[in-house]
Each structure stands twice: as C-alpha cells, then as structure tokens.
Image (cartoon, rainbow, N blue to C red; front, side, top):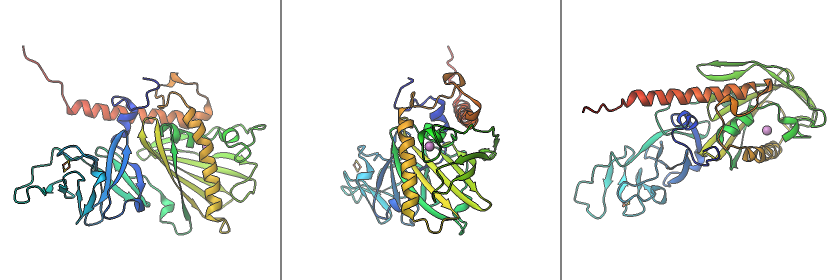
Length: 348
Ligand code: FES
Ligand code: CO
C-alpha cells in the first residue's frame, strides 16, 4: 500500500486527521442559496448556509435515492435535493416531499450525515468527526498593524501532510527556492534549533536563515523563523527581520485525498507599505509552485510515520517531531475507537 493514492482508513495518518479541523473553502465561496461540493479525506461533502447564515457541512448524499445534494440548491434556509425536490432543514430533518405534500416526511436521521463546521479567519473549517483540538490560533488576524493577504489556493497532486512538512522544512530553501530564498552554490548550514510540544501542538525556537537575494523588498536580510503547528494540517511561521518587522504565513493544507491537497494561505505583514498585493502574491505563487513540483514527486505519497522508512539529520528535527505527533494522534484515535467498540464475545 506504499504508493496508494487513496486513504487507507486504518492508517494512522487517516486516523489522526478524521477528528481534526481542516480548511475546506473560503467563507466567500459559500453563498446563500447555493450548495457547494467539496472533498475532504476522500469523502464528498456539500457546504451550504442555513437560514441564519450558519455554515453546514454534510455528506453529499440524499438518503432517498443517493443523489448528490450539491447539485441542488438552498431555499428558505433548507437544502433541496436535485432529484425529487425533497428538502432538509439545518437539523437534518426532512421537511418536504413534493410528491406527497399531505404525508409526514420519512425520518431522515440515519441517512443524512452532518459534519462539524465553523468559520474563522475568513475560512470554512470542517471536521468529519467531533474534533479533539480547538481551531488553530492566528494572533495577527485581529491585529490591525498587520496587513492580511490571501494567497492560493494552490492545488497539489500530493499529500497534505507532506506539504505541511515541506512548509516546516527550512533546509530546502537554497535548492527548491534557488536564487530567491538561498544560494545553491553556497548553502548556509542550518544551526541547531529546538522543538517544543505542549497541549497546543508543536513550536520551535528561532531558526536563523540568511536570505542573500532579499525579502519581498529585495533587501538581503537575516531572518529568524519561529514555526508553530496547531493542527496536523495547519502550520504557521513568524519571520522576524530587524527589530519590529514581521512576516507571518498561516498555511492550511486540505487533505482532499491521500495524494491530493489544496493549500490555503494567509500572509500577515507589518511592514512594506509600498509593496502591492500583486508583489506579495507573485512571490508566494512562485514559491508554492516550486514546492509543488517537489511534494508531487515524493514517494510514497503518504507521509511515512515510521522513522526507519527515510533518512534523517538534525535539521529535520521539526519534521521528525511532526511525524511523531501525527502518529500519536492517530494512535489516540485508534485507542478511542477500540475502547468504544468492545469485541463481541461469542458464547458457545
Ligand atoms: Fe434526493 Fe430523491 S434522491 S429527493
Ligand atoms: Co518551500
């Protein structure tokens, strides 16, 4: 199963992700009255807004004859199936069967599947099962001294966890981002750094990287990166240059399937008033295109969670900790599942 493109549902990576928040769309992508199809962890889902404007994320499935609800529409705060026009309210209850308006609608509670959905930071978040962690932190979102720019989405034919690990990897800059974020002829050794783990996830000490080709302004800088991972598919760094200049990137990788992901990015920056949004996006687009080629080339597609499967050095510390953390989360979920469903005792 090493090269499998679909999720192995018993795999620890899948187990680690099914009860976590994932970004599935931008808030503005889901408009009142319309249903939107998305895919998360190999499941087809439909997003829509109920009468109060609250986001709903359901399995894209009508329990009458199995049609996709996303082909329907939303009327009076209820979703209407495209096939026979049945309607379902925000609670998942069938409220209308047009062929038999005088009869009570059949019970739908076992055949309509609602997932967990929230909105924050201009993004829609979804968890297939009850999430075990809170929504990630993004302190600069509320801070008016930071300008925010949405970048992407970037579509990768690659694994979401591989792409997050790529984002957390500071030793690839001179090669993948040659002559932009480093010099391949004279790559700087990476100084040792620390990785901390607490109830919020992982974070690092400052990692110093010299950028000879400059930052967004083209000024050569020594940058100090601090990384955080709040959620398996949400990572974030604050890059300090100078005393007060901060450049932050809040990255979310939607695990569409085991070998497919979508990257949603928010940049928060407190300097460079003269930089245009186009200049910021131009650089992000270039960097993520360069990363895409590498992540799509990685095999196996899924992130190996056993240490012996790949070679490691000290600069990989964050990636190693990240893999270990994903494995732990997966094992926790698996243990819960086992304790929730005790084996049947067969009496002979
Ligand atoms: Fe949905 Fe018939 S399949 S109403
Ligand atoms: Co990169």
